[in-house]
Image (cartoon, rainbow, N blue to C red; front, top):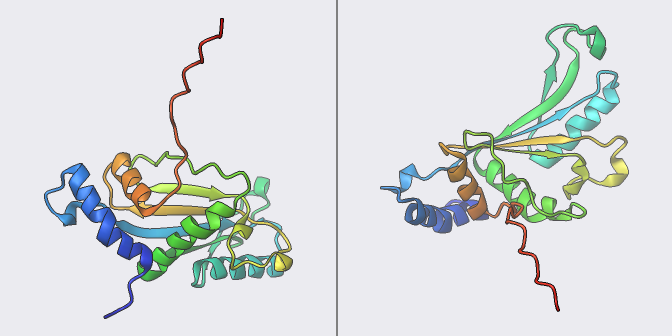
Length: 192
């Protein structure tokens, strides 16, 4: 028997039957699933080679695979960009690596954010979810002593859901800690 990541096991054993039951799908193949997760980090235009190497190393530690450098296509003087200059790096996760990263994000990284009250329940209109993280040191793979400059991280979770509600239900069943958007509590009556 081959290895199955724990979050994928949760998806197959609990999320799929729950979505079939609540959404009324005819079969389990209609249930939305995760397609890929993309990680992206920008690099300053005036960054030196050591800083670029540090960002690439840190993103590789977080993702578990080597990121690809993104380069500028043309010169933009206002942004101090030259053609073919490194402006960021990105990595796309699929398969087991995708499931393992999402588990670490939900169970380990997000709860370590100071004053964390949940992530925004807003999706992009096509069932995909984007998270922006301002400080990547929330991941346990990163040692703070080695970090010379803090970097941000954009995480895009791509699903096969056709609507935002389907995507939100899928992510909620996988354990994504969405912020509660409840109505304001009713005012208490005054004591006479």
